[in-house]
Length: 131
Figure 1 (tube, one colour):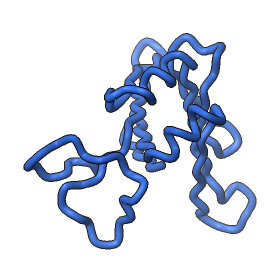
Figure 2 (cartoon, rainbow, N blue to C red):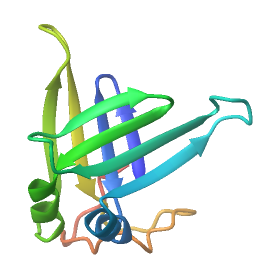
Figure 3 (spheres, one colour):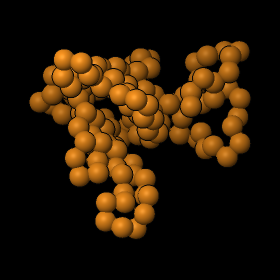
Figure 4 (cartoon, rainbow, N blue to C red):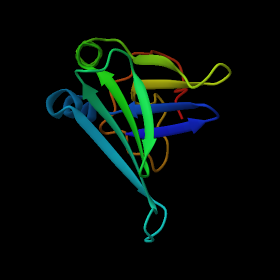
């Protein structure tokens, strides 16, 4: 799973096995270690939550958790739909853009990048715009 944070937006890209795991187990998680000190690990998780009505994100205890309504997650996973988007209102002036996408293989190989778990790219004749 890839995580991209830019301003007030987060984007998570899931490979084929991660989408399958999300549907099967109701959760997929990845971590990045910044140090061996307590609090030096950032975890990002996508969970299927039957109680959720919309996509939501929280940050607590060094974990970014994105929750998806069950029906929405299953429909997305079992279709050709690329991504899910939601704008989570923080207050009157601020929102968090949340995007969950299937990760596609680039049409042109990137040195050092493992794309073995990426979805086949449906585009023909164009360069990969994902980063």
